[in-house]
Image (cartoon, rainbow, N blue to C red; front, side, top):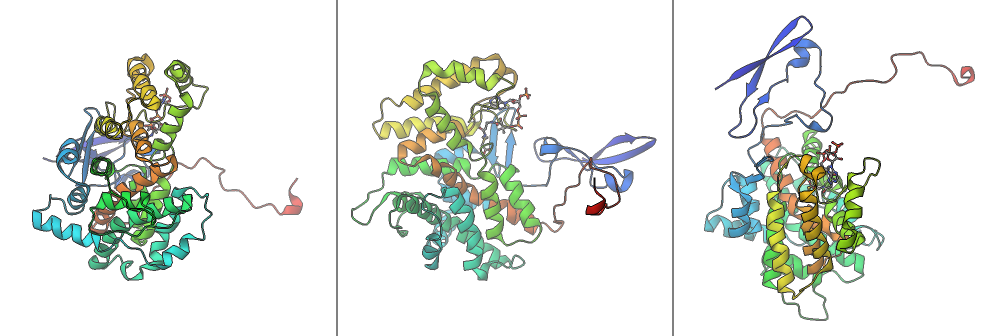
Length: 429
Ligand code: CMC
């Protein structure tokens, strides 16, 4: 059913088409607004703007619902594995057993990186942040894999996608190993995706390493939770970079750069640092007061979300995973978990947080879990980037395959100086 809405501007009246999705809010199509009225719309931060049409991920922020291709995140996290989620996001349907086996095989064949990459890594300082190394090394993939940078060729696009999903764990593990001065561990392809990653991070050549299946399953679930989240900042960055025709490696590197910020993927690192800084439950009220103080820039990290005005469904699964991991590792009392649980309880009862609908997001508990597994805080956002790569790629592919795709080119409300004449240096007062 199509409908229209009417916009009255000065003495003009403009009919704007209203487009409906399968679920979720409809959109007013303003693409002809400038031609019809000479006016732009103004929406800094895109709070009311749908930047594209997509069939991949759906979020109902009021109800706390997240669907990948229609499937609830809870069901995917409970029953599936990460590569199945990758297949689903990329191709739109859950794979059959044969399709799954073929997909796993194809990803696995791409896990090694060009040997010259090892030399490339040595150009980084050892104390570089692993996210800096990821931005650089993923961008550099375009210099190593020329045969998959022609975006007009569907086969090359597919190969580039497989390469990135497969190589991201290898590069992430290399970034970690490099930062601690240990030798790189090559992938071992008879292991599943996540076990392979754990081994590349924590094995050393001097000893045997046995992957703990409980930890591997928990991390795999964490990857599923992070795999896509519709048009968030980093995904929109990937789409915008890709809209100019840039190669996929460069686009994903752009996404990683955007993810790094503390308001986005960097929040998991910031949340753990905050819990460490708070230290004991007695100090929580002091930090709650800081978070509420308009004159203090401090925010409760891992709290609040642009879209979720209810409990982030990923945070619930993450909280359960945290307990599973701590149990498995025999960590009976984790002071950080104590602070987190207490902080959550206090915040959820506080008028400020209730009124602003601020709930824990995925990053609130992920840091505690990843730390318990042995990852340093600097790796947290790297793991987010690893898992989100498939979402970025699925969204990028959807955009490239859309026949109506054009370069993204936002406009502006100009508030600078009107036209004025140049004054030579000698004449300036
Ligand atoms: N602590 C205290 N106050 C907050 C917080 C918080 N964590 N989050 C939002 N507020 C307040 C904010 O001060 C504002 O108050 P007022 O209306 O009085 O000015 C109101 O709530 C709305 O906040 P906003 O900044 O306008 O909302 P936004 O949609 O632009 O920002 C956010 C969303 C996620 C950036 C923000 O909630 C935040 O900074 N949270 C902490 C960082 C974080 O955990 N980020 C991870 C997000 S989930 C994973 C991901 O996307 O990568």
